[in-house]
Length: 60
Image (tube, rainbow, N blue to C red; front, side, top):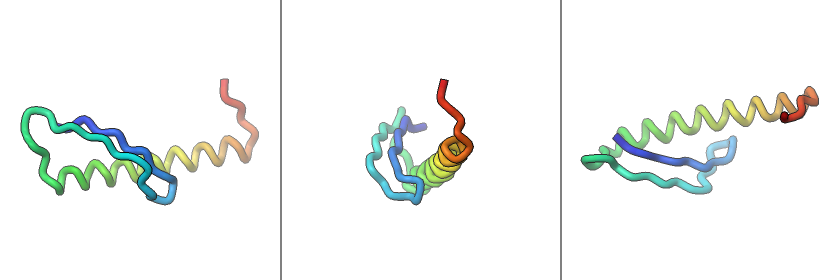
């Protein structure tokens, strides 16, 4: 298990990564899986933000 924070651009550029393994070290393939999930989530959030801006949806 790992606690991780990824700060990235919508096109996959890495700004910051922070992570701490819990109990035992995390294998690199598991870390890369987390990075892939972060890529997908950040890309999706960026799409939602662009849509909100395009359609004039205001944050409440």
